[in-house]
Length: 499
Ligand code: ATP
View 1 (cartoon, rainbow, N blue to C red):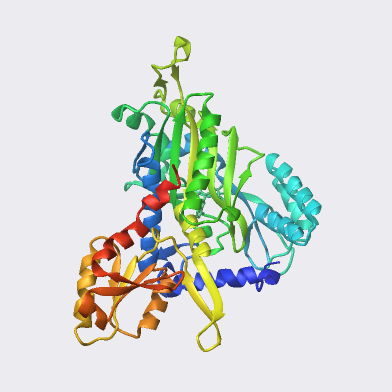
View 2: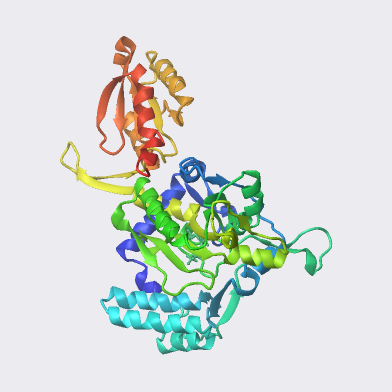
């Protein structure tokens, strides 16, 4: 199956994006000099800027634009009982299967899902649907042998050995464990958190009381999470160490539906405001709900490798707080002065969660921004221009300043312009190489503006400002640059779309 997929246009496109990310300092394989570590990646000089911009915008969209949403930063290590209470110790599992010949490990459900996707791609939608339903039923029944039988029935083979010599299907817990302190016994076993949400739940009362928060209110957090993923492919889509941006919104029981609808609409608007077109986003409503949820939807993005989850929005009822109350023996109740009925004044709030991976959002933005424009140049030759069409607010570098030539006082003048801008915007100065090449380099990392200082600048203090997407140039007075660039890169451009 994987072999056939190798040279599809979508796969070629995705490979190009991965190479681009590496070549231009966005994402490197971790410990690359030692041939990398599977599903672990490092962000390079441009990648970290882009990722920081994404995180900052998410953070501000949550906390600055919502008076009743505040942030926290909880530790990665938590008391081990947290993960007992949340259900992760007992059931944060994926079903895995090994091929005995290649020794390659797969997620059993994903093997079947991929086969269904293959049917759908060939226009056999009914067959695909029927297969997914069969799988869903087996998952519900936790029937691992049944899933294995389905793999055999469908004659699914290992992509490497091309055999169907499969082991049993077994459950595999995705949490990484380590030890805390110097005594190695069971009591000192701790986990690297597999989600950031629990750090919010256990701090619910701390924040509510110290911040005098009134329900409804939300707590937002950005932080690392760790999962020992079985299927670790597709670049930074599925990583073993990744970052989540989660927000838990605490509401009165019975008011969760309204809140759930609000956050679904708001989160889609947010993604569109970042430059993702509406037709590349869709909701996938969960029919089969997790035991703790009464409604759940994924926002899916059309990655080059298909429609996949980008963000989850879950109405989690009072499950988590109730569990922590039960395990910690500490009351997790909120006293609501505004509720008239005195029997209903005290309650455990319901929770609506929005959860998006910073890395997955980064990948969606990168895939969306990667643009190849083919046109005809001045000499009538066909040429492809490659650039990252990033929203100016997201671009790692906002503006690059070049002197036209490295003499006649132009570098000195260009440095003056650089000094004028660098305190407000991520600005670079470059006096090596030809202007055309410098423009190309900036296009490849998504810099929205390039400024060239030429001989005319020395006479009238004007420069050319080149726009990345249109490649058009305009002549501007140096004194107008800050306002012009400032307007284009203002966070307001994103936030306006959210109001
Ligand atoms: P999936 O079905 O893709 O494994 P999930 O449903 O387990 O995802 P959640 O637990 O809801 O994901 O996590 C919320 C968000 O965190 C996801 O929508 C995704 O953006 C991100 N995320 C989850 N697992 C990973 C991972 N291994 N690597 C990168 N991002 C992840």
